[in-house]
Length: 115
Image (cartoon, rainbow, N blue to C red; front, side, top):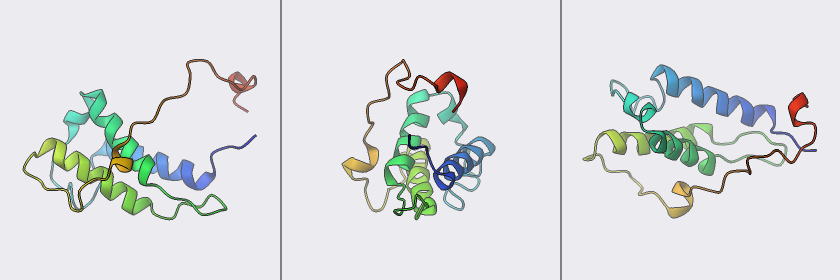
């Protein structure tokens, strides 16, 4: 059974850390208080979706563009907190797509064991 690779796992972990400590999107969001996205779940959801949609990997699972994905998510956050900010280039529909979540029940019978 396929698992998320270490590179992608590390990229997601780092994004979460930077979001939480207020340093995501440096220098675009430097000095900007974007903590409001933590009070509006759909705002954080959109930023995470953009990051995931833009993130690319090579055949071996190594992340190729973590900074570009972070920058696009940061641009969305900046636009959310500052409606006068112009995203350049504008977002494409595939970047902001909210894909269906997995079902509420795990399909993996070993999921509870963390395997």
